[in-house]
Length: 480
RNA sequence: GCCGAGGUGGCAGAAUGGUUAAUGCGACGGACUGCAGAUCCGUUUCCUGGGGGUUCGAUUCCCUCCCUCGGCUCCA
Image 1 (cartoon, rainbow, N blue to C red):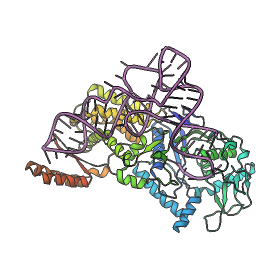
Image 2 (cartoon, protein in one colour; image 1 turned 180 degrees about the vertical axis):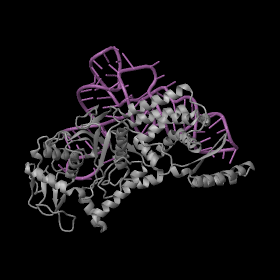
Image 3 (spheres, rainbow, N blue to C red; image 1 turned 90 degrees about the vertical axis):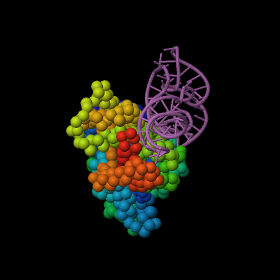
Image 4 (cartoon, rainbow, N blue to C red; image 1 turned 90 degrees about the horizontal axis):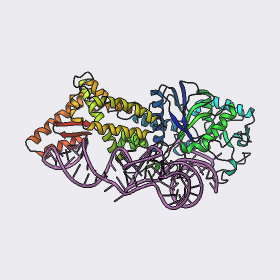
């Protein structure tokens, strides 16, 4: 197991990670409340945690990665009522769309996506425990609240002090609460809402408690890593700490708290409630998943990332194309000839450099997941190999695989460099070959109008041409 | 007001108590091309918010001020 360091929101420092029960590691990430389509801000967070998961697995940790889905809450109920549909069905639908986007982005590291409504028995059990220990109380309408005053450590994660919370900002004064900072863990329902029976009447889970109930059930009293976007630090994660530690007495609830920075839309946070959102589905359809994933990982995960519409992703697309040019070429050769193709071995310094680079890449990522620095190293390798491009055809399969090993690292850990599998199927390749042949003949007889027409048609179909001294090569544009 | 995170070239964004502050985009020049694109090569020595302090040396550490963003019971 490789050692790595990580910033912990709770202690506000970077330190070496150590699993509670090695080699097993539990990672819990707060997922979506799918009342609307997921946007590219969500994408940043979940792509980042995907890299965390990939890296941990590569480094020999036995990871169990859980990402919850809050499939029932006030907004879902509201939105469903507006649209005249069932809230659980609405959540299901948006979640399915989210999963398709994640799949396109190469996020396949999550082991389990639990739904809040599937954990009602665990939630009720935890509420009972909290009531027994005096941390919670039942209000007149049958709701149950957590009493913040009873948990003296409240605020230790976020640094907030209860007395300094700005009263009136959004701290609703609610007659059912004993104190304004108390939060609901079981919400009495009105007829027509999805509800579950409880000793206090029909109700449904409050937001914060679903996560702790799931973690206690799935990962144990304490988890190794707990993460989300940093907008969830307060009150959500603060509430989770209070709920879990009040329930079990075990602390700290999470060994490390990981929070990823916000995606800013022109200097302002991208948020469903502000409305300045770009959906993942549409973005992937228009620019492709590769450039989007590259864009996310091209900044440190804790920095705010400024999204400039009409610029950021176009720029990322250019940069990503540059980054992958050598990798793609090697991939094409190996695909065509097989990895046992004969040829020259790698000249001496290069072989060693490739090996060293892979080690440096791991070391760089092991320093608080510095994906940007890792990408910079990969750009350096591409620059190094770009001059080898004309000689690539001369190398053996083994040599090519060795040269490509840093890119294979990028594929495994960063989820970049994967080439469109269907792009060069036999049928497609032969059709393109016919078109290219027609174009060459047109060029040969000086009929450039026809040659350019074929080029444009191919371009429209997603086929990019590269004329060079040795003839014309082509490749499928990266698809979403 | 309180709690956090930031402020780096035209833009996006790393890093570091010490020779030219990474990388990419863009721009410019060149190679290749029928042209364009793609690709390759080169150039882009004047960029670390302001002011103090510690130090032989600060962009980095400390103090202070200014600005931006996030959170303050909806948020990834």
